Image (cartoon, rainbow over all chains, first blue to last red; front, side):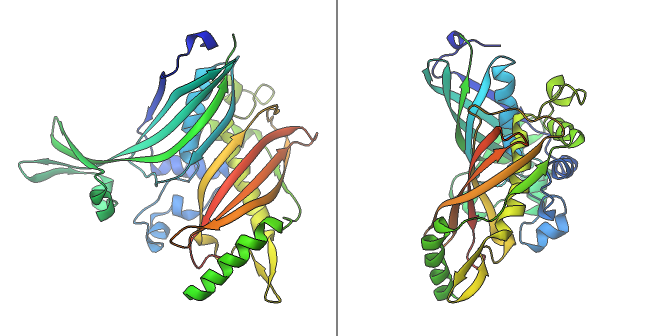
Length: 179
Length: 164
């Protein structure tokens, strides 16, 4: 576990999670008590115009706290975390959590937080779709996403992957480490 | 609900919500099984969070759980007098979204299985954006059955037009 002298301004802590699925959202709903069916039942989510279930607003926060908790270890502690929920997180998303050290004062470390999602849409080869992901099938991508330049491509083994990358939850955190 | 009524309701709530006393308190019993299940959702393997009933405390993310339960209890209890009639603060719960949460654990006690948390809340302020989404900022103080502080929470909810 790090001591305060091990941490430097500009240091980035990162955690990736790509296993967001309906079963996990059902488990989270039961464990958290947030049982709104828009998070667990596609038919209900579709009736409210969501095109499919969305993760709970605070679901991503769990991964952020876990990342910071494991970073501070047994002797450090989390003092404060604040996040804004700016975009929906869905099944099939790769959730990337990053915390950058911006200031160190005494035993306290101040961090800027960014949680962003990579949403795979489809893979094309020779102009043909060879694989379609949930976001492509259910039409999660909007004209606004395209206009904002959030849709990107990259080459993968099977062809050209089209995906959306966007910030889901910016925020801040304060942790305390031992000398 | 027409635009004029939405505007009128927004102005009323911006002025009056910070003065409202949120009645009562929410009591949340922290069960061992739920605490462990919650931690496992996020892949915790540390015995401190998923071990035996005698050794565990709640993982930090568990704050989500008691925050949501407190809101489900406290927000529906908020009533205001508008134009001589009693109204709920929230007219349509499906229009409510979480916009922001801040958790502070300074000088706070950990949560153990069997603890009964007591959450009390007050509104700080309310405002609208250009699309007439009403934002309400609420402060929640959470203590345990021994009156020890567990967490201070500042939460901003966003209510879409028609929901207030």
